[in-house]
Image (cartoon, rainbow, N blue to C red; front, side, top):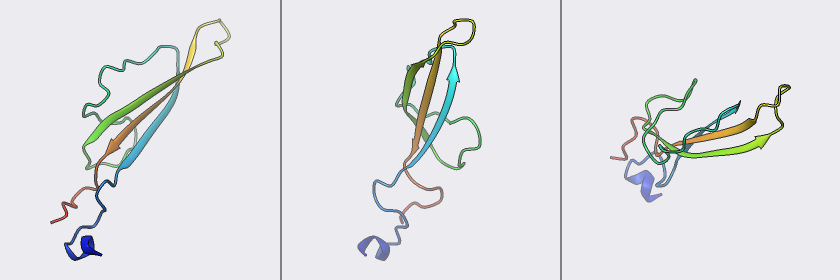
Length: 86
C-alpha cells in the first residue's frame, strides 16, 4: 500500500523480459552481454533494454553436416515507459 500512496505504479524490481529463439549455423558473440541493446523484431518500445543472456545449445547438423545451434537471447527492461514513480 505504501507504494500506491506514493503514486508508484510498478513495484521495485519489476522487470520485463524479451526472448528471441533462433536456429543458426554460427555461434553468437557474447561480448555485449550486460550492455544496453535493443531486441530484434516486434518488441515493446519505449524501454531501455539490456542484453541479459545468450544461451547456445548444439543441435543435430543440417543435411550437409554443417553445425547448427539453438540460440536463446534474453533482454530485460527495468520498468514500464512513462512510469517514474513520482
